[in-house]
Length: 171
Image 1 (cartoon, rainbow, N blue to C red):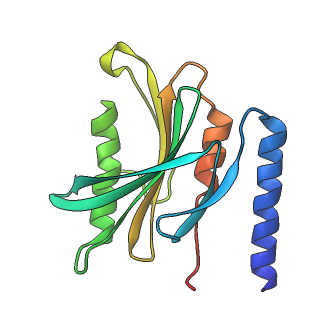
Image 2 (cartoon, rainbow, N blue to C red):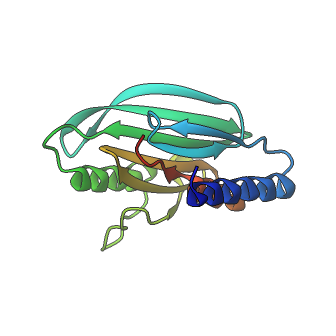
C-alpha cells in the first residue's frame, strides 16, 4: 500500500474521529457508494433505492444510497453516463434540477462541478435546506446531498458529509 493511500486513510479516520467527538448522536459509517466509484461516511444505517430520472431529456437509472438522521436525509446518488453522452451536460442538468426541486432561484452562473451548493426554500409552507455537490468520475455522475428542515439543520455534519465524498481510484 502506497504512502499516499495510507495518508488518505489516516486523514479520513481522523476526520471521522473528530466528527464522532463533535456529534456523539451521529453513528458515522464508512461505505463504498456509486458501485464502488466513491467512498463516504453516513451518519446512520443506509438503505438504497433505484429510480428513473430524466437529465437533459435522457432517461437514466439513478441509484440513491441514503441514511436518515432525525428529520434529515444524507444521501449519495449516482448514474452511469451512457456511451456517447456528454457527462458535463448531464451533470449540469442534475445540478439545475436542485433549484427546480427546491423552488430556489438558480444563479446567473451555474455552480462548477464539485462546488458546494446551499439552498433554502419555503416550498409547501415549510422552510427546507438543501446542501449538495456533484462530481463526475469513472463514467458516472455522483451527487452528495443533505436535506431537511431549516430549523436545527446540522450544518457542520452536512458540510463534513459533502467533503467526505471522495472518488476512488481504479482497481
